[in-house]
Image 1 (cartoon, one colour):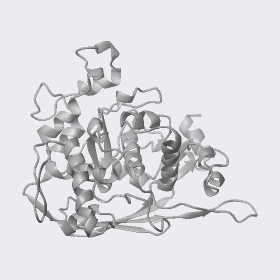
Image 2 (cartoon, one colour; image 1 turned 180 degrees about the vertical axis):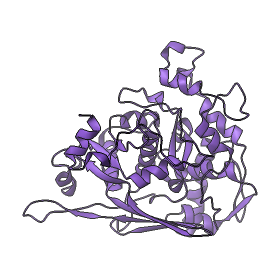
Image 3 (cartoon, helix red, strand yellow; image 1 turned 45 degrees about the vertical axis):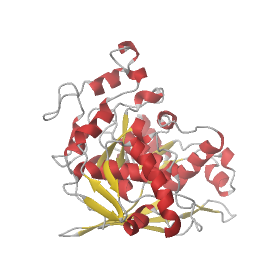
Image 4 (cartoon, one colour; image 1 turned 120 degrees about the vertical axis):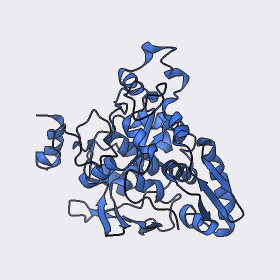
Length: 384
C-alpha cells in the first residue's frame, strides 16, 4: 500500500480523496503553465535548496494580522479593491465525557505568512503528482532555515502554534468581477493527522508538548488555485524581511504588483493605512510604515517606487531586473566554482529550457517567466 493511501486510511478517508495520478493539474490557463523546474525539496535537502519559493496571489494583497489581535477569536476582515477575505477562527469538540473544546485563534505575525509560502511551494514541487495534496512536515525545517529564521525554543513553539491556527481557520474569499462575483469558502487543510494528545496539549497551553502534525491534507480547491495563481518569490530576498510582518506584506505585494503595472499607481496614505496598517492609529502608522518600507525596498532594490507627501507611487518595475534574483545564487551554490556540490535538482533548475526571448545566459523556468511577463490570472486589481 502506498504511503499516501496509508495516510488516507488512518484519516478514515477513502483512497480517492488523495488520488495518486501523476497527471498535471488540469485545466490550467495556457498562459500560466504549472511550474516544471522548482527544486524538489526533501527532508534531507540543504537549506540552500530553496532558491525560490511561491506564495498565492491572495496572500500577497490580503494578509493575516501582523500582531496578536485584542480578541484573537473574532473574525478578521481584509479588503483590497474588488477582493475581500474573511478569516474566521474555529472551535472543535474533543471526544470524551469531559465536553472538552479546543479554541483556535486567528493566525498572526510573521509565521503564517511564511507557512503559506511553504504550503504553496510544496504543492508546486514537480516531484509530486498534480493532484497529490498531502504534505509531510519533513522539509519544513529546511524551509525556515533557508529564510534564516530561528528554529528553536520559543520560536519553534510559536511556529507550531501558528501552524495549528492556520490549519483550523476558515477563509472566505470574494472577488467581484465584471460578469460574476466569485466566492470561495474553505479551510486551508481539510484533513490533518496529529500525534496522540496534540489537541489536548494545545487546549491546555502546553506548547512544549505539542508535536508536529504527521500529515496535512490541503483542501483540493485551495490546492488547485494555488497551482494556478502562484507568485514566485526569491528566497534570499524574502529572508531579509522574514521576521517583519509589515515589511513582508510590502515585499510580497511589490513582487506581485510591480511587474504587472502599465501605468503609475498612486496610493494615498489612507489607503496604505487600511491595507498595511493592521489597525494602527493613523498618528503612528507613518513611522512604522516608513521603517517597513525601507526594509522591503532593501529586499527589492529594483522596485520603482516613490514616497510622496500624499502617499506612495508605484511604477512598473522591469521584470528582467526582478528575474535576476531568481538566477543569482549565493556563493555556496556557484556551479562554476563547485559543480560537484550542487544537487542534481538544482542543476536541472539552472539548466531549465529557455522561455520566449530570455537571454541565453539566464535560463529561467517557464512558470517564473510567465509570472514576470504579465498577468496570468484574473483579479489583478489596483488598490482603490
